[in-house]
Structures are given as C-alpha cells and as structure tokens.
Image (cartoon, rainbow, N blue to C red; front, side, top):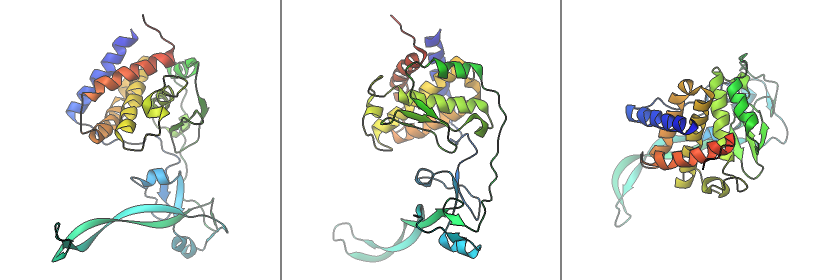
Length: 280
C-alpha cells in the first residue's frame, strides 16, 4: 500500500509543477526576523543570517530612547542597490564612457531588540494556535526507532548532521497544524541520510547551499515529507506548499523534472526507513 501512496504523491507533485505553483512560504508565524521599526520581515539570504526576532540599527535604537547593551555584537543585513558605473571594453578593459546600471551588494548592521538592547520594547506579539496533535503524524514521529534528538524552538527548522538534532517550530506556531508535521517530516527525512543510517551524499558531505548535491537532497527531503503526509492522510493540505518548494530547487537544477523520479526513489528509501518497512 505504501508504495502506491508514494507514486500517487509523486504524480500529484509533477502535475502541480506542470500547472505552475504559488511562491513557497514558511508555514509558521512566530520567530521570524523582522525590522523593529517597520515590522517588515527580512527576505532572501537575511532569513539565514538572522535568527527570529526584531532587529534595529544603532540609530533607530538611540532615536527611540534606547541603547545597545555593552559588549553586544551586531548582525549584518544584506541588500542590493542599483548604481550607475562606466562600462568597460571587454577586450581592453578601458572605460568606454557609457554608463550602465548594475546591482551592488551592500549591508548594514543591526542589533536584536530585547536581547541586545535596553530602554525599548519589542513591538511584535507572538500568536499561538491551539491545535490538537494529529494522531497519525505523532505515530510516524514516535515510530521512527532510530530517530535523532528533537528540539522545538520557534523560527527555524533544520537538521544538524554533526549533532544529529532536528529542530522544528512547535505546533502552536502553525496556523495549519498539518504544516507542522510536513515541516517535521522534511527534517527527519534529512536525518535518514546520516552516515549511520542511509549514508546519503547530500547529508554526510558538506554540500554548499545551492549546489547540485544540496539541491538534490532538498528534493529528496520534500518528496519524502510529501509521502509521509500521504501516509498520515494530510497530503491534500500540504501539497501546494511542497510543490512550490520543490519547484524552487528544480530551478536551481535547470528545471530538470526528470530528477523528480530519481529523487523519489531515494525519498522512498528514507520513508521506508522511518516507517521501519522492509520489502523483498
């Protein structure tokens, strides 16, 4: 029965990819990094540079009557700025006199409000959602016999191979409880790649972010998560988000949809490992 579910989920995702997908989103609400003054969420690479919380520049803090705690180390926020520069001849390297507009990376420094500041208060109030655990999702988690250690901190979801730890925001941080389990399943599929489990290249090695190896591992993890959602009976509520996430990594791999098939085979192995299923 499980193999049939795997095939159905894979086919659903391929169909979604062919139809076009909505932009992927983080399905939890608490613990995201935002600008303290504007309350706008940071985007792009900044979501990886900053832990969840509210951040302000030194000027914003002092203008609001606060101060930075002694010894606090600032954090970097990156942004792109369009600027005009003189074009250079490709052969000679000399300036042609023509001006072209190019994006240049810039950055500024911020401090975490509350943790690194005094005299100003955080503005954002955390939301909590009162969900009952989904029984089939809990059953999958608890049935993973060789599981990593779990932590439940808001704002970030990750698997750290060197420490064998999975972190997922708690159930109360998700407007849709199914997305909590989808996120959890994604990370525990990553954990099956540990050298003492299935020993997958994208986990045991130090694959750099955005590399082909890293991108393929993300495909495996999200396909595996979708399969586990199918086993838990919550796939209809998570499939759009999963398809969008998968599409973002297919773009990094030159939109080669044939990779779905090979990645799904690895995902099936990971899911069977979690479910402790063996086939002849």
